[in-house]
Image 1: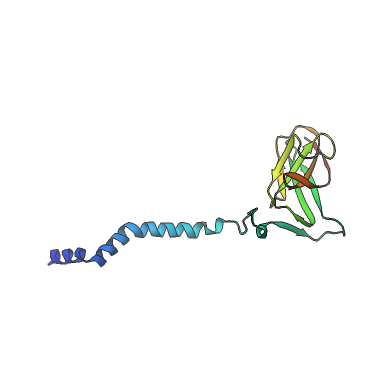
Image 2: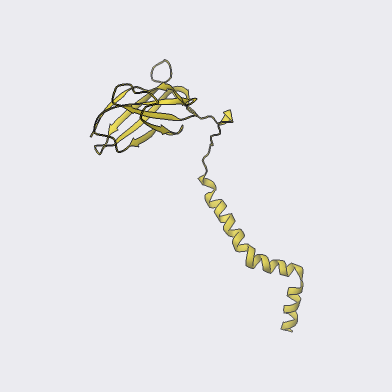
Length: 160
């Protein structure tokens, strides 16, 4: 009797599908679904696509004084030949192509220079390490067509 039920079970297409799916596909299917759910929150909310102007990131701050848009750069030497930089954008500026932090031995360094540090459009702080000791000058600029379109204030730093 047991032999007859066993044979009958495996002769049915529905049972064969059920057994195959449950034994072979179900763990794989569950693993894939779990991974999709687990990693679905890892994607950025907005993606940058230079071909689509709707995705062009812009930054808006209410300036403390009326006037043209500007960038304010602040520097804090860490004492280990590194400097932490923070910047804010005052007014409405298009930073879709990113920003570049430039360094020089003379005031008001310009891009291109021998020393620069590219930053993505969403960045507002960075630490530059392994700097030479001594007086250095820094500015950050907004990139437009691979050129600096607007520079920040000039910051003099005594790197230690």
